[in-house]
Length: 610
Image (cartoon, rainbow, N blue to C red; front, side, top):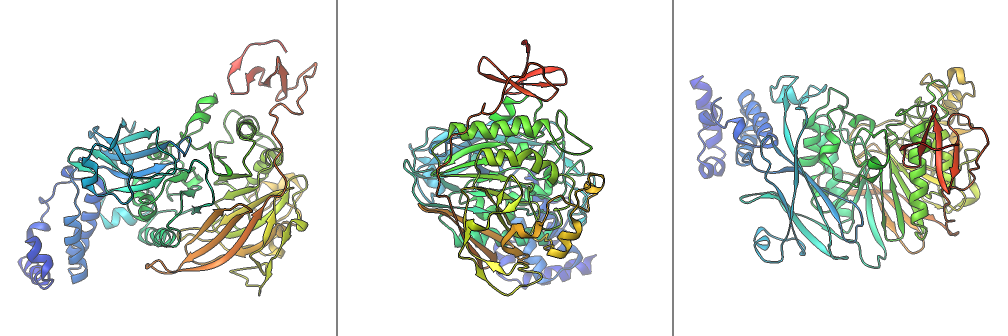
C-alpha cells in the first residue's frame, strides 16, 4: 500500500500547480474517512467518488488531475442544485423556477435582478427581487441507481441506493415585459450559479426558440453528446427565448428509476441551455415513475391537472401559453388509459377524447387571434421509424386527429422516434399528404440512412392540414428510417393483427414523408424562428465539443388563411336517449354520460336530469 501511495504522490507532484496550489496529500484524499458524504451535495459528492475510484484504480495524470478538480468542486450540503426556469403562465410577466437540495435543507428563495450577465455582487443591491420558495420533501426516497449499470459501477454504489431530497419551487410574477433578468436560488451563504432569461416583449416581434428532445441520459456517452448539443445550440442561437423539450429526459423510468440520470440532465447535459433560457417541458414514456421525479423537477402551469377528476401522473405536463404570434399547446398523451379506454380496438379514450381534446378546444377558443397554433408532445400521431408500429398510435390518431382538424393546429412538434422526419401537411380526414400545399423542395440524392425521400428544405402551407415534425435526438439513442417497401409490408386494415407491435393502419404511409427523412447520426437541434410571414425551421447537427454545427435542413411553415374561432359546443346535439360515452348540452353547458354517471366539461361528477 505504501508503494502505491508513493507512486501516487510522485504522479500528483508532477502535476505542478495542482498539488502545490491545493496542498493535497493524495494518501489523505484517497482515505475512506476523508470527505464525508453527509457534508456535501449529492451531485458533487458522487462526482468526487467517481474520480476518486478512477484515480485509485488507475493513477494516471489525467485521472489525478480530475480528482483534484472534483475535490475543489465539492459543494457544502446546503447548496442548491438541479436548478431550472420554466415557462409558467404569461411569459410577459411570469416565470417558474425549481431546484433541489439535500434532505433536511428546507431554506430556499429565488433572487432576480433586471440585468444581463449579473455577478454575485449585483445581488447585494436594493433592486433585487426576492421570492420565497415552497419546499417539499420527496414523499419517498428517490432511487439514485436504476437499471443501467454505469453509475453504480463507476461510483461503486449498491443497485438499490436511494436518497430523500427537498424540492423547491418559486413563481416570479409582476415582471417587466421585454427585460433580461439574471437569477439565482439558495439562501444566505449558499447561492447557486447565476442564470438568465428574457421576458416576452409587450409587442413581440420576430423571435427564435429551440427544439431538442430524447436525451435518454443513461451513461457518460449520453451525457456528453447531449451536452455537446446544448453547447452548440446556445452558441448557434444565443438569442433563443426558450427551449422546447418533449420528453425522454432519462432512460430509466418505472420503479427502476434513476435520479442520477435526472441529476446529470440538469447539472451537466443541459446546463448550458438552462443558464441561458427557460425550458418548456413535457413528459416522455421513459420519464414515467411512481416516484414522480418529473413533478419534483419542473414548475409549470398546473391548471389542467386541477380541472380533471382523474389526475395525470405528473403535475404540469399539459399547459398552454401565448408567445408573440403563436399559441403553444404543450400536452401529454401518456395517461390515455386513465378512467377508461377501448383496450381491444383502441378506438376511444376518455382521457384524450374528453379531457385533452376539450382542453385543446378551450385554449383555441380563448386565444383566437394568434396566427399559428403549435402543439408539443412526446408521443407521435405519425412517425416513420421503430415507433411507427407501436400499439398506441392508432388510438392517438383516432382520438386526436379530429381535434387537430377542429383546432386547425398548424405544427405538431413530436419526440419519441429519434429520427429526423418531415411529415405532411396531413389531411386529417383521410391521412394523406396535401401535396398542393408544398413548394420549393430541393431534390437531392437518396441516402438509405440520412435521407430516404431524396427531398430537403421547402415551404409547407398549413391552411388545410397539420405539419408534423420530429427533430431526431439531441443525444445518442438513434433509430433508422423505414423505407417504402417496409412501410407497405407493415400496413394492415385487419384489427386482429393491428395491435401486435408489427403493423400500422396508415395506407400509403411513406407518402406522408414529404421532406427530409432520415438519421443524421449526430446530436441534433432545431432553431425555430417566428417571423411575420412564416415559421422558419433550421436544423443542425452538433459536430464537436467546440460548438461547431452543420445546417442540414431549412423549411418555411406558412399559413395564409386565418384560423376560425373554435366553438367548444359546436356540433353537439341533445338526444332524447343517450348511450354511454355520448355528450349533450343542458342550459348551455357541456356534459357527458360515462359509466352511468354525468360529468361536466371539467370532468367533475354532477347530478342533472338528461
